[in-house]
Image (tube, rainbow, N blue to C red; front, side, top):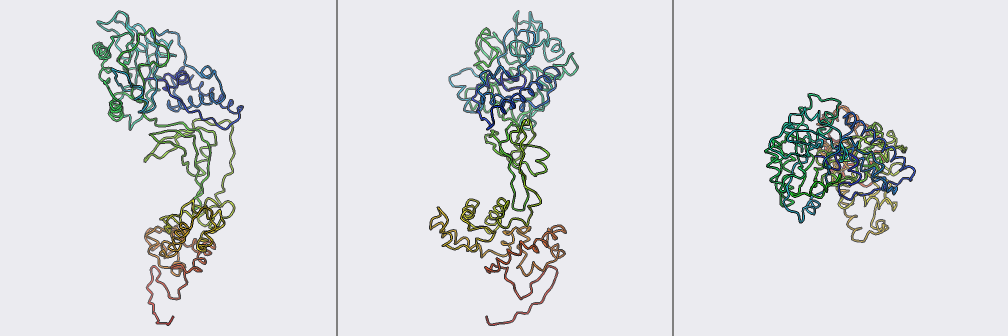
Length: 586
């Protein structure tokens, strides 16, 4: 069923009424000149999409993406104080045929609380699935279908009579009906056992619109069904209207209209229809008040007697506020998009991980662009597409991949802050030495006071040096110092993990000490389960690198377990060594 944010009713209803909800106006930090430039460009693009949709039946953009961009344009107009915003928006083609009764559209309720507020004090309420199709007005005179009008702008629409007569689901003749009968409903694409929760919208609305907007009727029109959702000036009570519609042959209306008394009732049917196989695509539910005013009071705007509660959108449009380049512990560079917050599935989405630099360059995303975001498994935000590119393309200072690798940034050098911090956080985490109470914030405090400039500088910390850290009380200093001392006693394998050697915990646990691993050849590394030729060479090169050897030297100076040079030969993988132990006075 079309409502103020559906593409069937398009921009006019979205922009003027915004479904009765207060839309947060988040104004970008742009000059007025730039903002007007962006507004003009987006306005023109929406107009082009409208022309393709209405003149040729071509849906060039998903409905929910279109709706999101329309809302963005309205926000921008608010930001520049445009009091005539609604007059500057692409509007629906008016058509030439007058509706005998205006099509009102629907108010949109954003959440359960809003539904409860709307229901308060109302009686004789009914809920229906909100069918995702194309609105139509049907007019019968003496039981004969004489007019079928597209929604248009709610007051006038296109003459669809010839096409609607080709739809078997629409009766051409009715018996025992009023002399003049006006019905409003939804022409929809018929589907078999459609589960909205798992299958989504499948572009059903655009497909139905395309069939109806062709120049002449086609055989495809047989794929359309009809759901009558309004009988202006019909019987006073909903139950009676539904029964008479069934008697006329409009069977779906009664079958999918359920009486409700509470928000819980509405929510139950909403969830049921969301997951249950249906013969049509839906995008929410509509709550109707059984008693409606006479049609002479209806206007081409949402009436007070019906409201929609849509399903969570599969995609949301979000503006990119920042493009960040995150350098990880191993030197990999990932791109993160900071977004203007959008709400999906009861959570606020403020960022999305884009992936590698190469992928970012392929997407060509800059600050100010608008992207479509979905939620994948476990509710993780995922970038679906770029839906609008800002006119002003910002350039970025991009980290050079050749400067970052598994052996870079063991010390705090220019350009190394991110990778160095990632190394420290890993070292103190459960993946490394498990230093309780020391995370990113704690490391930052130590760095800010000049106490940590290298990965192992914390080995030199004393209670006296820790006392220089502002805001760190005596008890906290003592606790931290004790944790640092305990960390020095961790097993050799834990130290290998903490230093970032590319081994799994199981692999590192098989290794005994530095004297052993420094002698190992790539072939000997491959004898450890899970290590192939590529990993073996990587390990061999890692242990020979000057940057790593400087860490080993530091560990030896502090007599860390497993790193002291031992004159006793250690068993290497693949060898059998007989070791004689002498009793030497120490």
